[in-house]
Image (cartoon, rainbow, N blue to C red; front, side):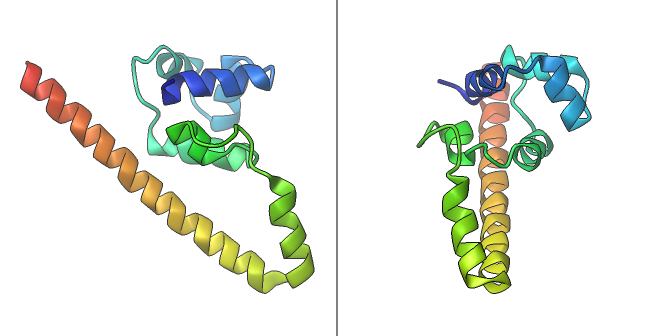
Length: 121
């Protein structure tokens, strides 16, 4: 299943319309429609927006189809409550680092798509 189809599954699981998601992300409904209809891949800005608006959305599931749709938020919040701000800061830095890696991976896939399209035409 593609990232585009997983986005549809997540949106429908939340009982949201394309317009609802577009409004939350500050984009046009047509942008969401084009992504879901596989006319475009989601940009890194769209993905980052999704992860900010929906912290429960498992980025590994959305990007690669790995694990479940939702993060285990309790497994994150309990250690933060137990160990204080230091672990929270480390967790945030870890997520930021992982976001950078995901952005690089997205850019690599975009480059591959562009190269494939230019080789065909």
